[in-house]
Image 1 (spheres, rainbow, N blue to C red):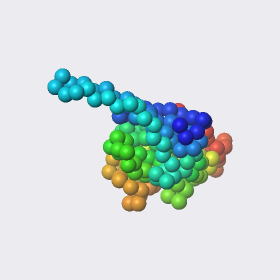
Image 2: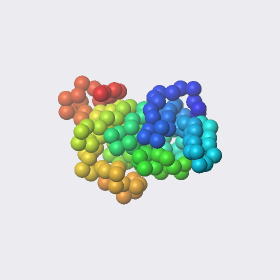
Image 3: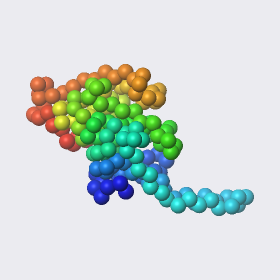
Image 4: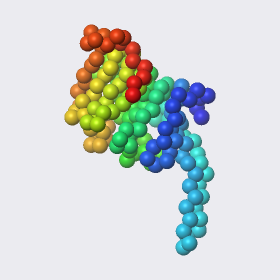
Length: 170
């Protein structure tokens, strides 16, 4: 592990275990023991791989993780969010989609993330609630953030929230 502090652990659709730490995200690739009568048994030991800013994360301080209904993995960080599309999770060379204040988040500190049945993304931040409209944000068809178009909605104390800091929701 890259750090002794682990905030959250999830499993992706490929049985990889992801650990959010205060210094990067660690992926544990589970051991494989495949056997077929016609071929020799193939064994692979479990291994750890850690990813940082230099690998494409928006920030090394990973606060929370979420696997959405499409199997994409979301990394909530101190600098915005990074997303790995489901079809890239099995690769060693990962390509993160990063969304920051520059793209329209209320604040760079993102604590939590949930999705509704329509696919809208709700992000709890230090600046209020950021909502990404699903009609403008489709990870299934987006390979990189360079061509992405985002449409954000916001809820803050001016809209009736008791505080602009939202840590957790479900």
